[in-house]
Amino acid sequence: MNNGDSTVPLLAARDLTKAHGATRALRGASVDLRAGEFLAVTGPSGSGKSTLLHCLAGIVRPDAGSVTYDGERLDTLPEKRLSELRRGDFGVVFQFGQLIPELTALDNVALPLMLGGMPRARAQQRAGEWLERFGATGRQALRPGEMSGGQAQRTALARALVTGPRVVFADEPTGALDSLATEQVMTALTRTAREAGTAVLLVTHDAQVAAYADREVRLDDGVVAAGVAV
Ligand SMILES: Nc1ncnc2c1ncn2[C@@H]1O[C@H](COP(=O)(O)OP(=O)(O)OP(=O)(O)O)[C@@H](O)[C@H]1O
Ligand SMILES: [Mg+2]
Image 1 (cartoon, helix red, strand yellow):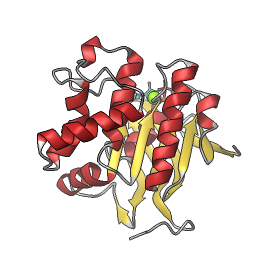
Image 2 (cartoon, protein in one colour; image 1 turned 120 degrees about the vertical axis):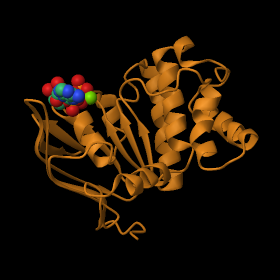
Image 3 (cartoon, protein in one colour; image 1 turned 90 degrees about the vertical axis):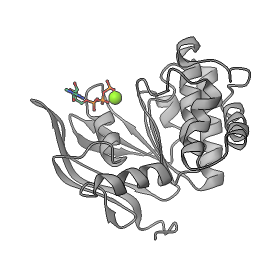
């Protein structure tokens, strides 16, 4: 197990390719994420950022190339082991539609804990603390259809972090927030990740958001174009 030796990446993608039909979303993308590191992935719309995040998080299998997590090949892992690993080690905030519409904010955040066997009352208490951390106090009873885009994203972030994952993948988590709310959410995310030693891979269009990262890589047309100093 890699316990934070900063020279060994916790997660490594090598030469990933992935096509959606005729569209070549990834054309040989390589990226490393070290334990506890906060990496921003930027790049123009359609450059493959979400596809790369999905491959790294074990949600989408690449057509070629490899993804290695903690010494284990993710891209060839059987589905059962992969979903265990995703549930235990990863938290994901998707770019679009991710909350369960029938559940309140509180229950959406409590759900991953309950799936892990925690009793409902305790899971809800912890979920409430996480919503508060992301500035969603007083919105706990709302269902996703009643939330603003920003409230939904805060709820999704709280849900991704509530289980204490080793890696959080967040795809445009501040896309629907104004700049004050962005600052509030990014401060909470950065502080929490640092305290818990959680690695963060965050996709963003926003230079204000990328500035929170330790490091930035830019995707261009399905390949990593550059490492950018931040
Ligand atoms: N499910 C899909 N079916 C068909 N094409 C897809 C699918 N998902 C992505 N694509 C295409 O693959 C390319 C890369 O998409 P991707 O969503 O990874 O880009 P992105 O960098 O995240 O863009 P954005 O900044 O707009 O979210 C785009 O041309 C997109 O249209
Ligand atoms: Mg995207």
